[in-house]
Length: 274
Length: 262
Image (cartoon, rainbow over all chains, first blue to last red; front, side):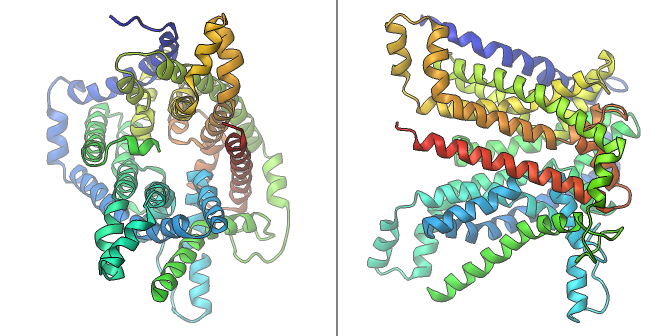
């Protein structure tokens, strides 16, 4: 048997901290789903029977399903220019995306709210130029929520997509052209498939992040866009209903895990570490 | 190709505006003379910064944030660096699985972690205490340290450490004089990341904090749920400038790392 290197013990402190202050508490929360207020599956029955719960879960899925393709489409040209532009332009673009990436989510959500308010920057601009007569409702509804999510999540697609694109050998595209493929065909059949690892990684990160979002929907969305994390918070803070909160957490965690599993099966999770 | 390039350039400009315009507007509004969030502001004033640094609720929040981010980021960096070193150099069976477990706090949605800690803390009397906040922030930010330091260790030549050991250096001396200097930029970089993440963290803090022990993010949150006024723009600008400074420091560290001869 291979002897364990003594340095292996260095993992122990972090492992114990993780076990005691993370794994055990989360396990405890999830177990509430089956034990609170009494043992059984009644909490899951409630999730299925009460239209409110079902609506919020569907809402959450729908919002993630809209945010993901929009973010990918907007991220694509930025990553493309980053990968194939001049080194100078690349440095500027990377810095430009890193600045919001490092800025607190709360600050960015607040900033987006100022822009989208009834008398905010966008409405004043549109009114001033006479494009509209009445301020558009942009905040506390689906528009505000989607704008906030896409804004915050763009870097999560731009960076993995960029790293995939930067590794594409330009000879591939030249070969496709030499063999008679039109630029569009070469792009669709050669370039796009080569970006898939980064694209899938970015898309999955966006999807699972949106599933669990709390700050953005609470600040920019309306009552009708309530998402699952807000419901969990509500169940605990307002009703002390740990059973339903546990069941909702389990659903959220299962959805997140399923998406990661899908990514692992298609691209491999190692991509994320890049 | 020209129309495609034009389309790409247009989209990139629009996305850049979408990413940066909100931040610019916040910074500008924080110097506004108007008592509400008007853009463009009617005049220049520093009254909101004055209010920010003289209102006890905000100064206390800033103090709590510092008392929280200093110990939690140092703890996360020490624990995470040790774990990364053990995982990469320790020849542990199942190291990949252990690494994946250590990454869990990033993957699990914040609300679940927050609710779980809040539930456990109730029995321990840790809700509303600085200790409770420090524990929560430490475990949340260990994964970032482990990932950064582990990837720095993987690119370092393990033979340098073997050479030191062969020449008779005890394990601690090898780590202190060979490994640590080589991975120092990554360690400092993850310390910076842990600091900024702790300063910005909201959801766990929201559950675990109290009216007395309330970090900046929570104080901002409670103001945001009421009426917006330019004080929030001022504190948001402070957060933004802090993030910008940390980002520039981190980029400098990374540049130093790649300039160093391999």
